[in-house]
Amino acid sequence: MKKNYIFTLLITLCLTGYSFGQEMLLNGGLEDWDDDSSPTSWTKSENLTKEATEIHGGSFSAKRDVQSKTKDLGQTITGIVPGESYTVSFWYKVTAGDDSDARIWCTWKNGATTVYHTGTSSNASTDVLRGPENGYLDNNGGVWSKHEVTVTAPADVDGFYYEVRSYKNSVTYWDDLSFVKNATASVKNNAIEGFTTYPNPITNNKFTVATSSNSSKSVTIFNLLGKQVFKTNFSGEKKDLDVSEINSGVYVLKVTESGKTTTKKLVIR
Image (cartoon, rainbow, N blue to C red; front, side, top):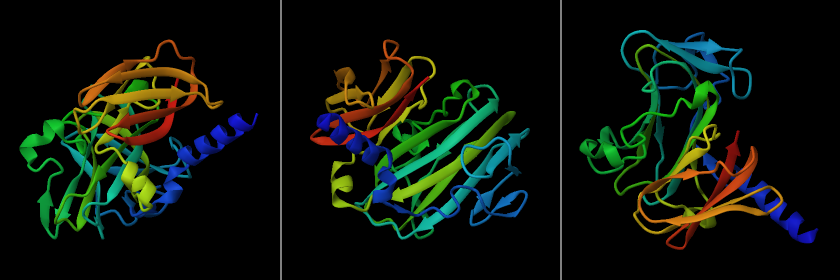
């Protein structure tokens, strides 16, 4: 009983990890609006509608029904510290489109100059902040899904441009967007560069684990009682993993790479 209590406490800390960091995005929950098409504090908001029915959290989300060209939701964030760890996340739901409908499209800033996470825009195929990897977010059957990635600020940057995009002939909802500075030493030192998993929730028995390194990785999944239900190892930047043998529910994913460990909530449907 004591062992399970301790593990459950650790799980709770993992699943509420944002409390250890500093939220730097303004109005990420999209609860405040200047009018029905302009969320407060956002630098750029194109073709948006204040939505009160299809929401992930709170009272409102942002709906974008795109019939023409690419449309963006963006915010400039200042006060970035080179070498510090930051976590980018958001919830999205795509209800119409062709599987190339939405994606993350962020960059670092040095004053007014754009700084790409991979060095140049031509390296978008390996950039976790653009696509990711120049691809598109998984529509995931039209359900609310979370995208999250942890990155380290490169040298000589002082800002970050947070942007999500929607594309022609798509309907996308955005909610609970976040940009957190992982302030504590333990979180910063243990952050795996470029760590991301998608889709989450998992609805087709497969998901991808990816980082910025080709180093060997250990991937373990625990249920909320602390029992290990899945374990595998692989080398390379990313791998698709089959979890068809695991029952639907909420789990904790643990990934270890080069002595660094990251944990996160994993939902299997």
